[in-house]
Image 1 (tube, rainbow, N blue to C red):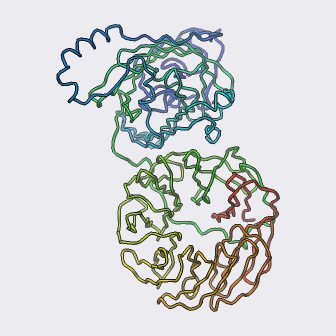
Image 2: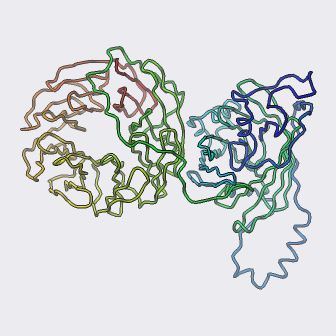
Length: 640
């Protein structure tokens, strides 16, 4: 698709021997090596419309073609021999047709959709030149594209009327490639599924964006062996509005060696007079599975060494006094669709977009600067939970996998798991994470490579997993219905039964404090003895220092003595969230974010004003305190 010339001068430079030729667009990196990444390659950052490998060089002294004012409609030809051959085969195979499995295909029907992977598919490819890549597929319907936080999504929206947007089926194929020398590149291609088949709308090759109008046919509606098509269109580089004439000749052949119903698509593409040929292989229900220079392989690591040591979060006392202004989108300009708080990684924050099921990372930058979109990934059909661990973020998915990305968004490892419980994983120590699964197991995995380290039977519950220190050893605390269970790796250290279902557990100097569904608080020592219990009718969530427990509710924030459970103070406020750094508390109420001392006095206050989000959270990172709502409203305060 948007192809720079495959030989001759750099794309956008005057042709040799053609001094009158006007200069065309030059990408930010116009070196030969950079331009090679823009040419069709195996599943590649080479061709934003499709992966492939150049096999026919163009003319280095060509005259630039003139972009057509109105592109002719694509001509699709179907093999005339197919009906004749089909009739002969029917007669020969009649006796075995009922017993032999076959892939149904109605001649002339729109079959392109079956050659697109389901949303959330993650596969890996090995390239002949030694490069490795991961390929993720995302599928959105209609106006869901408005939640796609990427440039090519916005480009498509800008070029479409709302009536076209609302009824469309969108497909994004994103390839993240690592070369043998360690260099990395990204290609994201946005397609639409319509009555023409699978058509390319917009793409991103590194930092270079490309749009096509009319869209370029990648897989025609009649995706059957023998089908051919031709098309002319115009490609636009939106940053400069430079236009390129583009023509495609495509054909389809059967590829039974790849599996039943698989096809090979061959493209002969001409961009401004220069021609390249490339090949893509697709299979029913699997989508793109390779090219003539790449093939599907087992999961592989595309990330280098990553640190899993979590940097100490910023102390609340060290926050700057300057106001952190509330901004919709926080400079991202996206709809966040968050239902859970972001997690912290070494370079920023990562969250799950619940509408698109994408994992989205953003980097805060300087405290007085807006946050910037860092990367977007789709690890599975549904992304359930995230764990941030230093340079690593681990996603649990609905297709029973754990997918670990480095802080730049490249896959570190992928391992299979059972169905993960409705609780996020926890980091037990520097190199270990624990995951609770619905089949009743608590499993420890090595954060560095995904290896299973230990496994123990453990019931599931509603309370989030908590890691506490017991005799200088990290242990995992589970609230399983009415049972409080403390696990020392694969053995039970402590188990206590309580009267009501547990909803939250937090650590104090003398043990743990349990909040149940009736808003009762119970203090349990690490030997299993109940030390006190008290009723707090207005208590939705708790946070605790060594000596004080803050109980947040709809009417008030209440401070309790961690030793006795006695009420120490109460501040009238409707509290949405409360966190602690072990010394101070930070709360969100209707009017502001406030830092509260253990004696109940306001240490610092930042007004927030009117917000639209349904849920609100506070998250402490290494350099800042983040306030965020489910509607992508952000405020952030950093160290002086």
